[in-house]
Length: 198
Image (cartoon, rainbow, N blue to C red):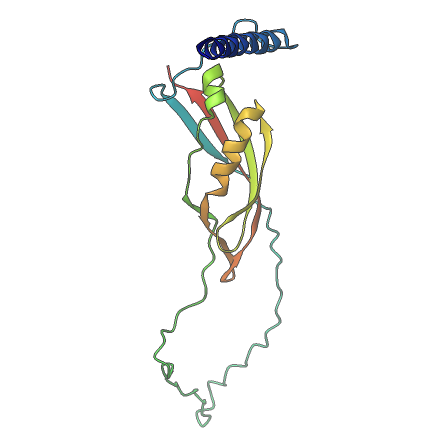
C-alpha cells in the first residue's frame, strides 16, 4: 500500500515537470517569440506618467448675414407750428410673475467645458515589457455632458487602446449651449500619452 502511494506521488511529480518543460519549449519555439524572456516588473514601485491632452479642433466658420431692414423715418413736427401736440407713449410697469419665479434675462450661450478628467490605468503588460506610447481617442458628448461613442482612432501600440477608451468614457462635460439649449458635440479628440518615469 505504501509502495503504491510512493509510486503515485513520484509519477505525478515527474509528469508535472515534464508538462512544464513541454509548455516552456512550445512558448520559446513559437514564431515571433522573444528568445530571452524578461521577468515581469513589479508594478507597485515603478513610477509612470500618463498625460492626456485635448486636441483643439478648428472652430467652425461662422458666416454672418447682413440683414437689411427698411425703416420709415417719422417726419419731424414743423417747428413753426406751435399748436401741434406730440403724443408720448405712456410707460407701463411690468408685474412680477404670479408664481413667485425669478425673471431672468435672455438665455446665455456657452462652449463645451470639461468638468471631470480621469487618467487611464497603465496596462500591466505594457509596463512589464517597458512599452511607452500614445492613443488618440475620438468621442461625442451628449446634451447631458456624458461621453458617447468613444473609440481609439490612432495608437502607437494597441495594448494602450482599451484603457485610454475606458478613461475617456468616464470624462464629464458641461454641454455646449446654443440659444439656451444644450447641444450634442461630435468629434472631440483627446490624446493619452503613456510614459515610464526614469
